[in-house]
Length: 169
Image (cartoon, rainbow, N blue to C red; front, side, top):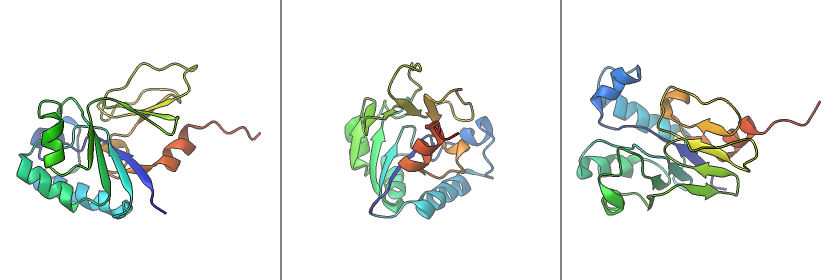
């Protein structure tokens, strides 16, 4: 059975992100290769991956070459660094689906690039990226940025199980 994964903020090809976020890579080439390897170490070809934005700073051909190497059916929710290129550009770069807006998944996850306003009375968990190494407090937010998860996508179940409060005593 196929798994569903979530991830964000790879910034493929973005040299400055290494320093901005203290990523453990010598250069962009090493970073790109390590992130492709990390992705493919958990995602199988028949899995589905929601990428919550800021995928690549590379041109279309180089971006397509990376997308083609990544396992899974790939859905991109555009991030602030993706929006200037438009939905069609990302489809041509190899994504299977592209959304310009947040999505709701399984009536549970509110998927967005930037964190959205949430409160404890809302029936969702906001799975988001954008803020990299920072983290919002509380069970209504889940930062899926690669910096928090060893550059690996997480499954629906991994996220769900970490935000659901156990009712066992």
